[in-house]
Length: 493
Ligand code: ATP
Image (tube, rainbow, N blue to C red; front, side):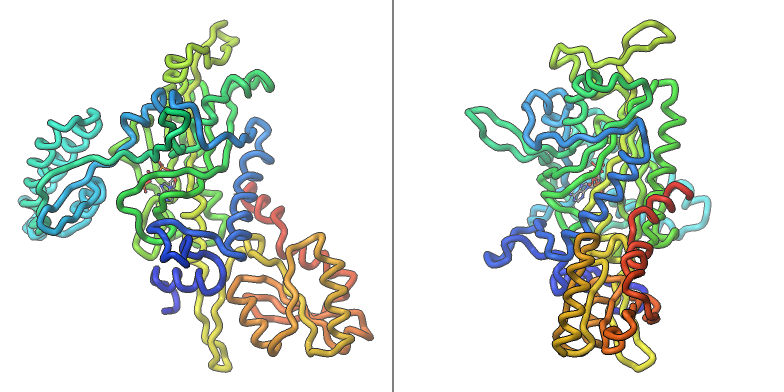
């Protein structure tokens, strides 16, 4: 583990060793791209969700939450366009029996410095323009909802791109894979949802009926989604089952730019409060949109394998509600008082994968420190609120009186915080274990405690220690670890 740069494989082995993430059904050798969250991982994940939920629902009086079903009526997916258009296109190399996602290949080609790129300016300019034109034409074919006969045309363009970039990749043909998992249910095919958004749109009327919201207003949801990813890799970055936090914000179409900009800023601000470092984030504007989107920005994070999408902000306009109106024969509209008419609002969507935030947190917060004593410590330097365990309580030694007192403290504080109690090994080893899982505070009961009713608090990052009166302990832990601090930081930024 180098000081600031942690390789993905080091994160994977840390996550397993310290109880954050395990490969699923590991005793049967696991299944590719599916993972289980361990005893500490589950708390970190829940804390991320709670922070997002509060930042959406609690502080915005015009955003409410839902929890909709994973399995939906199949017509929902016909209406949303997913049955037909939710797919990826792959390049295939026959000799190596190897596939690569077309959009990933394009991304790679455009990052690569070809021989051509090194040629003097004039020529480089020409090549760059040619490259961009070819890319534009490929994207156009994809956007036209390509049918098989267009694949041949794309392949010709891909081969031209290959030539001018001196790429050695050999591609024989293109094919597509649908991304939704199907299951049989009472003799019909239904689907595991690939996004939570559709449950929000199909409940638009129900929400309207109970709240009569005026525009703008939002509906948020956290939930599991499933995608039959063909190039599932990079640990929990790309999985086949993962969790999303999505918010659909319904607006007047005239205010599309205003709200798009607002949510783009708000979401980056939210990520910045996690304290992983401003330089780790950047915006990326899409040239190619998902079938439902008309405007799209990603917030990218610098993962151990480079900058990749963390969150998407999309303008879905009125695509989804219009489609659901058509397929359901129900009016999904709001009343415009000014013009005295009902109309379909536009939608700005913010959509983020919890697992990707989790990976971002691990990759930016996991440190290997060499201490003054030349010993090493693994440190998970995360925001104290996100820490799986808020405080650890130890008796200094295995002494009956100290154990009884430490257990009494544990019991008196356990209803307020998620704590752990430990009495095995030396105090140093216990500190190391807690540092490695990110516990912000360790509390030690010693012989002096029995007399002065004070305990020693030791802080994770600074390793500084202070004596605190037991009657002030609850307040001290609260001050260090409360979610209020994080939400307030978000509001102030
Ligand atoms: P990508 O381009 O990486 O495939 P996407 O553009 O398909 O992602 P969206 O459909 O916009 O992703 O989904 C919203 C969010 O869900 C993403 O920003 C990401 O955080 C998360 N996400 C998407 N696919 C996966 C996956 N396979 N595993 C984990 N998280 C994912």
